[in-house]
Length: 580
Image 1 (cartoon, rainbow, N blue to C red):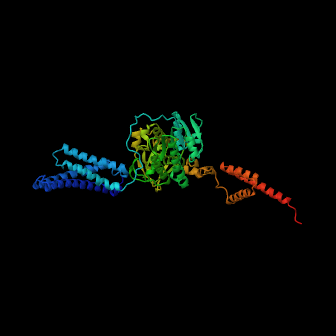
Image 2: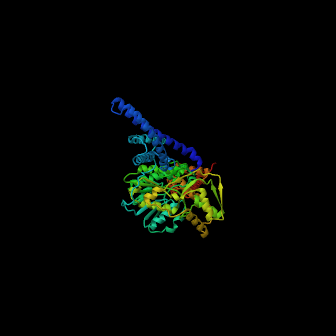
Image 3: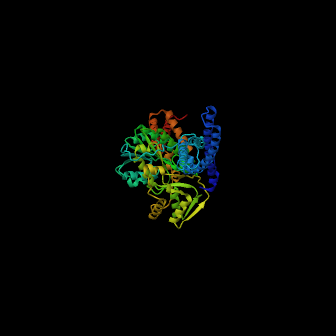
């Protein structure tokens, strides 16, 4: 924690909490004393007035001692309960639960001191009950009033993993299974004996799955998961769905915002609704820790979400839809991946660890922007294992649950990555540059470790070594090639344009000039006006080529139609008698 934040944020909150604890104890003492005084005045049922005065003096001393103990203990308990760190960003019922636990612990400790050390003057025990209520109101009220809206997270109650599986999984639909994560996951699922149906438009090609392309348990479907008919057809007969398909990354998602919303959000809703309607209970969704946005806190699954990019916002909204669909017959599991590194069937060098390592190896120089930003890191094969654990866990353990995927030990500041790169590539220069990336998030991974027994097997050094070996073996020769970057690949080459069209067809019209479009329109109108059965039949043939995505075939047919029209016009002109 930096000194600036300590003085600007933490200390004022601690002073406020200390004041609230003292006010709550004073209110509890006053309530108890005036109740005794009221009994004396109204019913003469209490002690004599002189006794009350002496009692007030005694209790006042006790209040000072109790207030001192409560202040010191309270601040310690609140600190270790995360009031000023990760739990500060909790919302709704989770914030209330954290406050209830901490305040209750404080008064239990005070009561224990009263019981074990009778020599210390303390307040009447009834005042501890009143103090507990007043402290809950004083500490919790201001915090809860600032955040009155539903939480995005699932239930925090951990369920034992020893329960019997609800149903054995045999057939898994992996959407986006040819991508960076998908290729690693699909290969691992096949190794474990699962039958996998891989649904992917193959925008990035099929090289990523070449190693297991002909595996007998793999069914490859090259279709668009935005198409509801394709989704319905491919969900049939599946025991589980793993949805990895998306336009991934802030820069790639910014290329076409409407398309990003369509692919990342609307398609997710369609897939989930189809899966639920067709009785598929297990649904594992790939989300991202970037939904937390920029924060100086240590965040966990119950922390407030603050996405700062369209990519993260589409993931957050998809999470909401999935949690709303959760019921006894549909059990979505949301996995928020940290920043992934390492090599898979489809290498990527638009990820921080991979990019820094590749720059250091190929160019002898790696630039770090800022350096103080935190990133939670996780290897791509560990991500695949986390997905498999979610698939294998009892439904009751993962239904409607959110898990951060990574490890507490692999929360790195970017500057620390620079040190690792320098250590493993000593010949490279690591240069720090002005910060351009404002994303900053440090994440806790206790939940997935406790509930799913997830233990990462790879470290950042392992990932860097993989890249060093890939360059040495010749597998990677130039990390700057477009197919190693989502943004670079999606903006290079007309063969990539299919993803930028809607479900009615997958064709590119960007190269057709306005004159050609006008000519085609005129040709179509002329055919319709001619009412020629032969020409109308040729037009239907041309439009069929459009539906199939063959614009060149469409243009060729139109050319032949125009030629036929010109020939007919010429023949008609020749048959007319010459003027006298």
